[in-house]
Length: 239
Length: 239
Image (cartoon, rainbow over all chains, first blue to last red):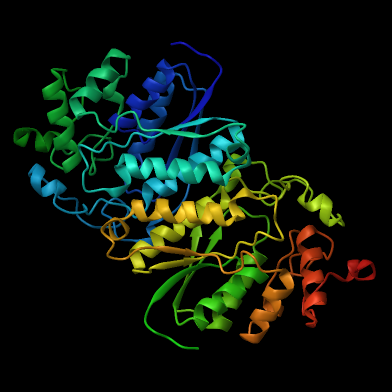
């Protein structure tokens, strides 16, 4: 891993995508300041995964911000609403999913902006992906560019041009299979990551939510062995 | 107060400016959904003031979001750094003040965006003011417009044009005296508000921090009696 002294804040959820982004930023020579959130998600295993990924990939610093998005309700990820299972890909993308958390990327990027301002980072990396989640407006390149414009007007370093801020979304046009191939080449241990919307307390994936289905398909298409730990009771239904 | 059924999210700090904005939004016929933050600020009297203001002005709903900005350190409002006292106005605006919290407006607006999305509000009001705080990049009209553009790309209602979002900053070009005159005409009880960066536990203002000095000057220039409760030990030094 090359290290040039330049710093980046990388949003790290503990999932497959953001782990890959940490590895990509690292490979590009950034000192990675990873940022995760305890935001009222039902499953703290995500944060355990984020910590393991941060350690495996050797980040410079890892901070966990506390905030409570349950206040606004409305998502299966933060409220007590059932996670949909075994849906077709058409059904997944037909509408804004129940797992959508209002304005989540906007909120997460805003904390990343604060972290960048304090740490002196000139880049923020986010693992959004337009292909797999076409239903989320805040996963599109147009949104990311508008966020970058706003961010450069929000801070003194941005306004003066002394340290213009870039929002990098390197996965935005990649398929899940491409992401997995890229991360595998960079040494990401995907066995540490968790994508499942409905894992058990031991961090084992359900194998049937939208996120599990997309992840399985990604490993299959990448021709990479899937190291995910699945819950035994669901094993017989695995696709 | 006219009520037309349209909803607005209004950022409410418990200070003089945001109380005025609540009254202005109310006067324009909005159902006000007020949003305050427990963000690791040293003084919870701010939130007590926000609750009193929300009650006095009869908002439709008042939510308090929990988040911890102390994580990033660096501000006298969240860390144990002394608040500067008795500075000249030139000194106040010469540099980014020690009371600056990194990316705070960006973070607060992002939570307001989540709240607007869930409540169906088409407007977000924020009490930023370019004249009094020229040192903050995120208090300028250019920043507010860029935030609005980004916000309209972040949500489905914005992207589809079904419910375009407006960020309103009605105080942006007003002097403190104008703000006080406007709020007084709309029935704001400024005795409930607190602007001080260094109040005592009873919510009495120090009278000497930048915010107290600007507030005092505002009341003086507006020709309105200052209802602020000051700490007794500082009374003899009041300007």
